[in-house]
Length: 242
Image (cartoon, rainbow, N blue to C red; front, top):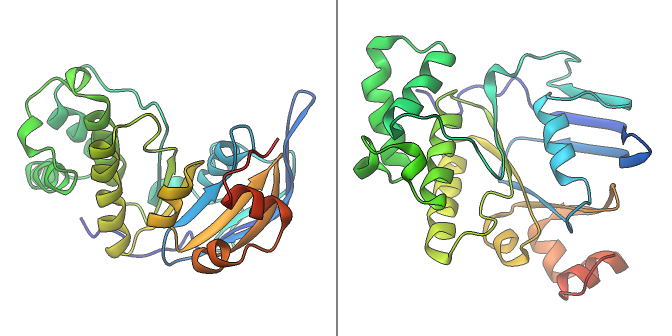
């Protein structure tokens, strides 16, 4: 597996994107560019639109108004994009077999499955759990297995929705170590969190969302050193955005 080779889907551009669900405007006139490079972290309180933005970027849903493009294309099959949701579902089979299923779905030849499974289990630190039922793994181990399944697609872009929510510190570090590793391999990581400390550890770029709008975007260093907007200053100071 080439891990990040080729990134024809990048940049992913949001052009004046609005997303409406029933009577609720989930995203409101969002304009954003997701380009190759260090991880982009979507920050904001619950309900700010982070998950919806990830789903739009993955191509799982279409905007109510506006336009999303992948590498200047309006329609791009998600063959080089992968997403891991906050509560991934484990297949009722072993950890190794979960990855084998993902490799099959990605069209990887059977002759390469054993090598692929071994590499992915090693990458996420689950070599010891290859034969264990996936549903009996700890929550943190299941999240790492979900990452391995996503990486079986050999994505150029990896979307992660609150990947460490409710995990203990050791499990959080294990997930973050994987994120650092895949980012170093050239995979563009876009992840959502409301955890400021995690954003400091992982982000190259910050996008702060509040009430469906982008409040502030820029380098993580500039965001944490000198946030420009009142909402960003409150968020960095640990105050609640309501």
